[in-house]
Length: 139
Image 1 (cartoon, rainbow, N blue to C red):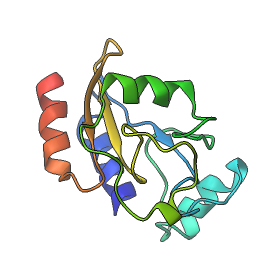
Image 2 (tube, helix red, strand yellow; image 1 turned 90 degrees about the horizontal axis):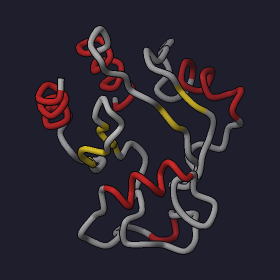
Image 3 (cartoon, rainbow, N blue to C red; image 1 turned 180 degrees about the vertical axis):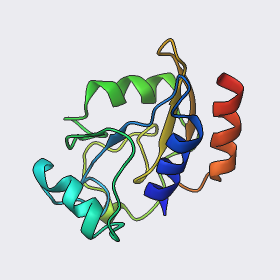
Image 4 (cartoon, rainbow, N blue to C red; image 1 turned 30 degrees about the vertical axis):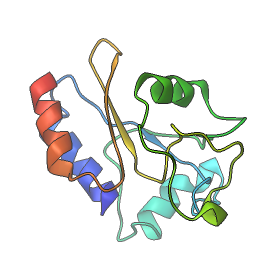
């Protein structure tokens, strides 16, 4: 469902100064064990499957939390911190150390302005309509 919503955002705003960037990560329940060259086939045939093709760039696998986190995600998390600690089943989180501003699960989203400034952070359960509203306001 999340992938289809990201494609829908590209359909709505892709002709404007907007794009979705997708990053695969295996730190949440080990749900993405594939290697980079397998990612597009996994999306097409498995998750979400049904012939899905992303309408946005999908980058190679990264770590978004822990000692080996990608500097982009360090910057985003420092710029847009959470006020509540990481919650959930720690047995399903595969990084160390766990920090208060860590990304909590797959499909957490960051909205960045056209000039590259982090604008807003959305957790997994944020209604897509809130994200759409903020995108519209920025555009």
